[in-house]
Amino acid sequence: MSFHAHLRCGAGCEGLLAPDEPVHLCPSCGGLLEVVHELAPLRERCPAEWTRLFDERTRRTAWPYGSGVWGKKEWVAPWVADENVVSMVEGGTSLLWAERYGRALGLGELWVKQCGNSHTGSFKDLGMTVLVSTVKQMIADGKPVRAVACASTGDTSASLAAYAAAAGIPAIVLLPRGQVTTAQLVQPLASGATVLALDTDFDGCMAAVRRLAADAGLYLANSMNALRLEGQKTVAIEIVQQFDWQVPDWVILPGGNLGNVSALGAGFELMRELGVTTREPRICVAQAAAANPLYEAYRRGWARVEPQVARPTAASAIRIGNPVSAARAVRALRRVDGLVEQASEAELADAAARADRTGLYACPHTGVAFAALEKLVARGVIGPRDRVVVLSTASALKFTELKVGYHEGTLADVPSPRHANRPIELSSDPAVISDAVRRALDTAAATAAATDAATRR
Ligand SMILES: *Cc1c(COP(=O)(O)O)cnc(C)c1O
Ligand SMILES: [Zn+2]
Image 1 (tube, rainbow, N blue to C red):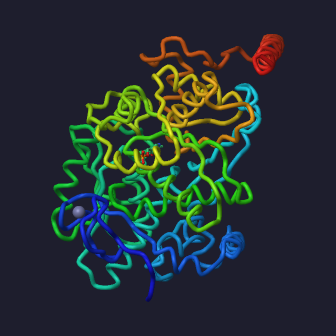
Image 2: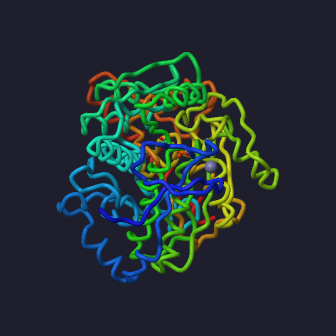
């Protein structure tokens, strides 16, 4: 099969590797690899031909192109033969107009890209389909891969385990014991993965899996693996496609290991290089204040990203103190005049709950992004006419514990939740019930009036 994509050392070592070689780090310096696509062959199709091709494939059944990732296969992972693609029809998630929440903030165009509406409930599926498909291809070609392995804050392992199970490949996942939600723990268990719950944090699990992956036969599936970023970059392409190939002004996303922002930036860059678009959006990475190494680096004028010990946060998927993709994330952000914001536990929980009051049901990481958005609007960095996209990274249904704690008022870090809503417990007496409903409707009317007044301010 002929294709024009290679693996190259991100630090500049000589030489190119095939993307289906079972290596995930530079053989010379041990640094991160990146996938490079030769642009000349891709330029043989003009921009209008590409957009027509992608539009024709979207959400159809011709294998494997109905997937949001594989519909862009030539730009993503042309090295995988169609019969080795392991797809759960990932991508194609809704880009919804958050009209009421946006208006409450004074924005005409706030959009939410619902990446959590994916097979395992997070954007991780976009990258995992490319990685596991490539592994299936390696095994078909007789390369010595026995299993895939990852360290995870929850969503990576859920995704890896499901895709590996679909392909019949063994999966080994390392989780920080007691630091992932019940839903996230049961996902890899249900998929039959070997789950190791370690007495350490995510960064400790990462160090352990890197040692394991040095053994031949275990293929590392963390986002330091460049293949995942190729799948994840399709979210940028999909957003632009959903705006009829127009580029938004801003994209805001939560960041932990910083693979996703690197991938997002790569997607926008590729579209511009191929002439499909003429500009790129500004990007804001939102971090939890409890795990904010990128924010600290940004605040000090893009100083070096110093590793820190991440503290507990409800945004558990971004509780990462030593982000693997920091360097590529900084490169992407600086290219697009990007910036970094942070949110405290109360800010992220209140922002998620405020968005929920407009029907969104946001996960805590999306809450971090919403809190950052509110700050940027308040500072006038984002203006009322800007078209803003917030990447919602996971389904909030995985994070029920936080929602329950918020509404019950039992979160230690959120002593006075501003949007808490408790069940009204009553007898079944009809008079008592109708009285309670009357009072609830009066309160609702007063709240709506206050929201509308805030909008007009
Ligand atoms: C993985 C994850 C993130 C962070 O993505 P990075 O690539 O590690 O920056 C954010 N939100 C959720 C829900 C995630 O699962
Ligand atoms: Zn190198």
